[in-house]
Amino acid sequence: MFWRADVLVRLVRLTPAPLAAGCLIHFDPDRWGGRQAALLTPDGYQLIVSPRPGLAHHLLLPGPAPPAVRAPLAAQPLFDAWHPQRLASTLAFWRYAQNPRVTRAPPMRAPRPTGRTLESTFMLWALDLAAAGASGREVAAALWGAVPVDWSDSPMRAQVRRLLATGGRLANGGYRALLRR
Image (cartoon, rainbow, N blue to C red):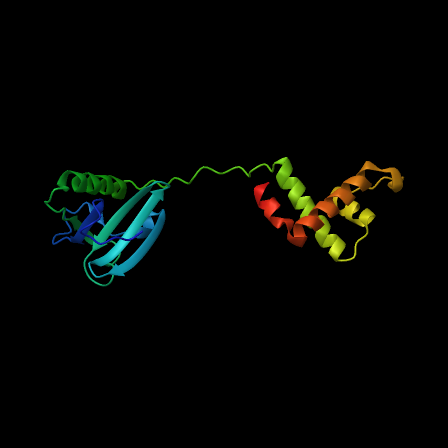
């Protein structure tokens, strides 16, 4: 999220450095890596570099465009009530710019569906199949694969009928009950 420069405490103000010989930070977003977002604001060119989830370096560069790649930069922290926090943000970015390490978010496991979720999913699937003209046996084959030979006495037949009846009630105005499930 982009904020005005005077409001954001973590904002690191960077300007072109006059002498490149002793400069330790160079404008090199490709080397910095991570996720990046840029925006031209009335304060200048803002760049957010996020090397890992939960960490973001907010940079403010003067002018309407970013500096040239590898251009030397100097930090200009403001001397105000938030000066210690601004210095800490500047130091954190300086350390990151010296040795950028990008870490990925840990992979999220796919959520395991609950019984109610599966039942609702099967109910909607059965309704769609029935609306397309499938018979109860064809619905069962689509939902569970193999269909018993003795279909008339099968518990699977009763389950398909129950899914279609409950789904039909929900589709015909009882859908609010689905939200309460």
